[in-house]
Length: 261
Length: 183
Image (cartoon, rainbow over all chains, first blue to last red; front, side, top):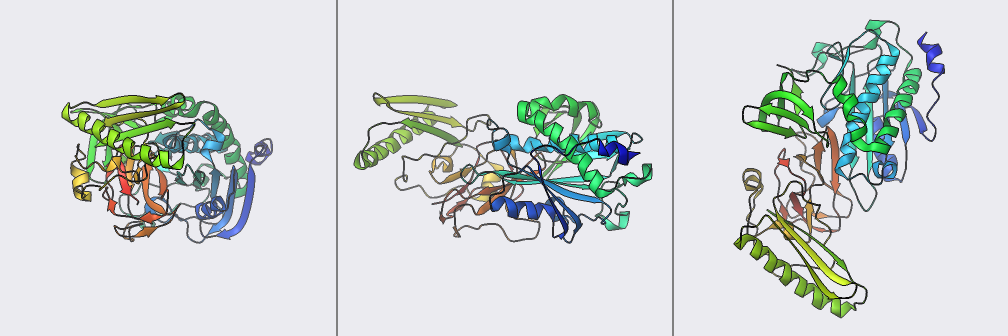
C-alpha cells in the first residue's frame, strides 16, 4: 500500500541524488562534496555507513534496511536574504519534513516534535537529525542535513548512552517502506518544507512546528553545558530560540538538550 | 564588550591617502570608544563626510545582542599598539563585560554570527581546533557555534596567527560576540 502511494510522489525537481553502497558517513560525504564546490540541493544516500554519527560524535547505529541520508544545501543560494544565523533554522525544516514523511508512511503513531529537531513517535525516537555546516561569507556557506530513520531496527537500551531517549522503529506500526522508497518520501516532503523556508524563512514554518510541539505549555528542562534551566515552555521565537518562562523571568535558549521531567 | 561597525563609501583615494586616512580613522574610532565609555552610552553612531561620495560611518555599541554584525574593517590595517590581552577564556566566560581593551575592536576579531554555544573541539576529548600561538590558514575551522542543533564550523577569514582565543569550550555566546583574534 505504501509502495503504490510512494510511486505517486515525484522526485523533487532540481534536486540531485548520489547513491552509495557504503560510506563513512553521509554528512562527511556531503562535507567533502561541498568543499569541492557542490552546489546542491543534493541528497547523499548510503545503504551502509561505516562511521555513522550523531551530535558531538555520538554513534548512530543503523542497518542497511534503515535509511541514512544527507541533504546538502547552500542556504544563501536558496534564500539570499538569509543571515548566517538563519541557516540554523533549517533544523525546523528537517524536523517538519521528517514528521510529514513518517505521517505519510504510517498514520498510527502520534508524532510530536521536541525542540528543535527531534521527531518523536509515541514519545520515542525513531529518527535522528544532524545538521553540520560552515558559515563562510567568502567561500560560500553550506549545510549538511543528515537524517537517520529507523525503518526496521532501533538500538537497544544497551547500545545507547545512559540517559538517552527511548528508541523506536517504524516497523512496529506495520511493514515499513524499503530505504529507497523512504528516501523518495522524505525527499518529497523536504522539498515542500524547503520551498516554504526559501520563500518565508522560519516565519513560514513556525506555526506548523508549534502545532506539533511536544509539551507546549508544560514544565520542561533545558540542559546547557554549564547550567540547567527549568521553566514552562511557552513559545519558540522568530529566530527559532526556545522560550521558557522561569521563576526569574523569560529565557530564550538557542542551544540546549531538552528533557521532560 | 564593544562592538563596532564601520562602512565607507569612497570614490577617489590613492594608496597613500588610504593609509593616512586609515590612521586617522583608527584615532577617530578610538576616541568614539572613549566617549562611549566616559558617558556610559549603549550605542553611538557617527557619520563623517569627507567629501561627495566619501564618508565614514562608525557605529559602536556596548554588548548589544541584537546589534548588527561586525563588518570587516577593511580600510584599517592594524590598530596601533594593541593593548595587552586581559580577557582570558575563563574571564570571558564569567564576565563578558565592557573592557578597555576591547577585543571586538581588533580588525582580526572573529565574531559569532549567531546566538549559540561554542565548541573549541571537534568532539569531546579531542584536541582544540586551534590554540593560542597556532598559525591558521584561510578557511581553516577555528571553532563550532551550535544553534538549533546546527553545528556551524566557523572558518578563519584569513591566514595568520592566533594571539587570543576569547571564548571557553561550551560557553554560550551572543550574536556578535568576539571569539578569536587572527593577526
